Image 1 (cartoon, rainbow, N blue to C red):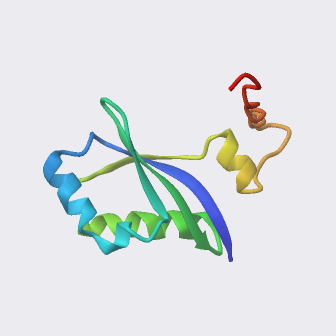
Image 2 (image 1 turned 180 degrees about the vertical axis):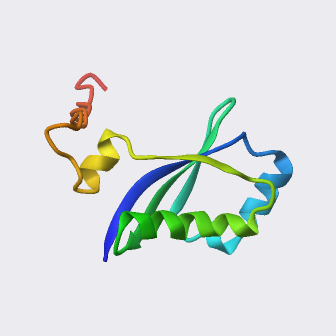
Length: 105
């Protein structure tokens, strides 16, 4: 078993009622999914333990059965996720270097 990292992009931002439902769902409160919202977007940053990436994504998607009206539009593996998942190759854009702390701060 290993940890897999990916992002689930939602079809639309969550409504206030959907947010209330989300905060009451135990399946979303175990730390494996983290909601990230923007002005016109919503996504979940996910870390799931599974034998395969497909299994991890299936586990994450199964949680939405208890979340009515919320649709997942896409699954993303960005360059950082590819690197963290051990899937980076010479054909994958490398992850950017970490930001250095401002010495004046």
